[in-house]
Image (cartoon, rainbow, N blue to C red; front, side, top):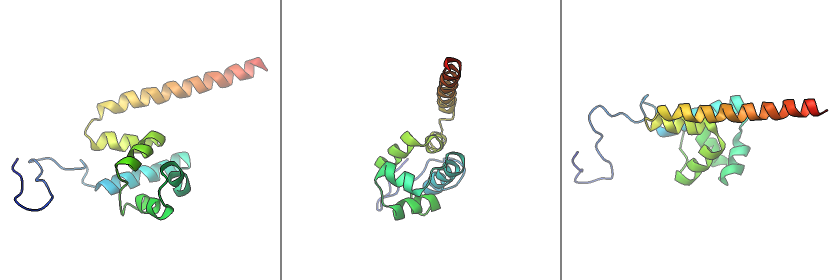
Length: 122
């Protein structure tokens, strides 16, 4: 890969598309946030509370107009499994999704066991 003489863009290697499905980074994060909104009732105010970002900024993330910066992206991935999954897919590391999903299933099984234990205690 050669570096361009001017400008701030790097040439991509042949056959490398980013993200893999042709959507932009902002669109991928927006799709993940919108899935989280449907699946887990994650809304603009919730995301703004997590990240400390302005609600207008968060609305732009949900719309796919802009994507979050690095710090906000890490905070989103910490709180929102859908964003973490989208990041893993965009990085081309789908094999990591299995470990993430197994950890989520283990957490849910523990919650179920605790709930059953509480029922048996009563």
